[in-house]
Image (cartoon, rainbow, N blue to C red; front, side):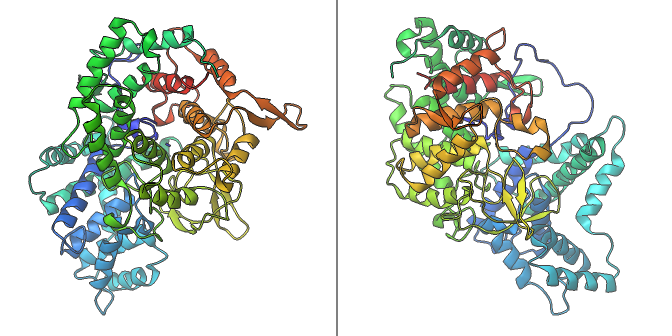
Length: 588
């Protein structure tokens, strides 16, 4: 979903420290809801994949069928819900397992065979139906017990008490994972890392189960007082230009939040900044510049995403040190693209995409930020990275004339449910091929069309424009038609009404930001929207409309917050305030 830190979804790990009106102390006792141990799981999977590739091993688990099966099972059950459609991330390991299948249908002893059954079942039950059936029969003949991952999850649930929850039961494995990730130069003990990963994912699965039990259902407008009020509020959230996130009881300076905050602060025209304001911004930019790592990224966590945020902030600064930093960042961003150099083929669903980094699947949110960052670093629009990105962009668009994706993808919200995805034809866009946070349209033949929705359709228009497509290109025109047919600032449009009213407000401030960026880049001066009486169309000055909308939503202290749906961290005022200021910048 789902932001110069949204995606929105990426800022779930970046919780600002001690914001006004929020509890700056320890969190209240009780169970954590939603995804737990996200960073540790992502980090371990990334390290295990990097180690396998560096050692040129046949599978993620090396030469061990058991380790590979356990690792793949954990990947399939974790919050990312990996699937065979994730291409080279899992394909070699699946091929390795099948190559080690015995004539009797087993994969070695009963333990290894049981784990392989779970791996094949969660990653692509339909494709491996025969292999799973034969292995199950073999297990029955050899007194095989319950499937091991299900048993691991049950073991976590069995230990839950009034004051002991999955987030506590995974702490030891999480601490070990963080230690391994911090010692990146040291060899990773593969077997122990797989053990930790399985435990962490079992805790994730147990926590999801508990969640289900508890909730089963032309000329520039002058810098305005509204913007200055928000600017002043943001200044109160930083220290020497640096924004922090909370790590336990400590506030830790964070490059992602700092990049986002500095981008928002720099929307105030430089000639209108006071000396003190400019000095604060430059102190923050100097600190941010110092966070760049040797590989060009600015963080180990969500490296692509945070690098895009840093580029957005630094590219506005005229300091001589910025140019070489942007060149390093450009190389890093190009390295994240899912293309031939990383084992992808054009037929792979994710070909041409970019994700959060650390071997994550690509998505449209990350990709449009990445393309923007690449252009900001000076990469020309005719570079092959943009040509390859178009392959993925077309697969996110519900436009049958260009979308060649059809296939099985895991349902992002329902464990074990696989969707038979195909393209629609309304011109809008989804999150990634076959996947939509707005729900699905089920066709008479049972196939699912991911619903187009507002924030991703604007992201598509923005990305197409950054990739050099002109306004008269049929792909661009189809996206603009969707925007005109669904024009609104009241909600993030496009969601399935059956999902409820709250879903319409998810990612609302991210929506405002990407809307403004896309329409500005595409040169859209007015949106031809449906007239209020339903008869014909009316020309909407989107800049004036957006200013008016945001002015009416601003809090008394100058901040903004999504009070209708906090999903994707929009319950955090710092995030929404940054989005709003960036959205207001092109509203001339």
